[in-house]
Amino acid sequence: MADTIWLVDVGYVVKASKGKFKLDYVLAERFLTEMLGPTSTFIFNGFDQAYGMPEDLQRFYDLMRRHGMQVRLQPMQSGPPGTNRQRRVDVDFSAHMVWQASLPEVRTLVLTTGDQDFIPAIELVRNQLGKRTICFRYRAMVHGDLVKAVDEWWLFEDHRERIARAPMPSARTR
Image (cartoon, rainbow, N blue to C red; front, side):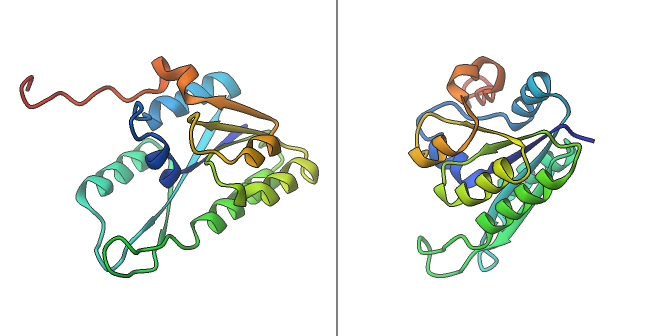
């Protein structure tokens, strides 16, 4: 059983990491385990049923599953390219946050997101269930009210050497 639950909004990670280092989810989970004890990870994202799952994204999800992480994918509202909208991901994230917080063995919930929509669930988890909440995130793209709602916040940038994905070799070095 895990003492800590890490809930990851992949959409946030992708957007907030632009121009920064890329997060290695496996290394980050190991870091959290070292810092907080046994950790279970849930990864949340949307996918477009009309266009299918890109091969590289499927490989990523398969790798995360092989490392014991739970991958939670919700269908997007389809439309012309560039107009697709994510649906149900935040609700799934919030539902899992409250469910995991209700388990007696879980002491800490680590959230990787920047979205203020999670504040009601965070308040419920903290005030009604008495669980510790940490926002583990990039410095950018986090709503100020979310930062205020959690017990602590940790920046990826402060732990870059332990959680950054190794750069991919360029075509010249292969």
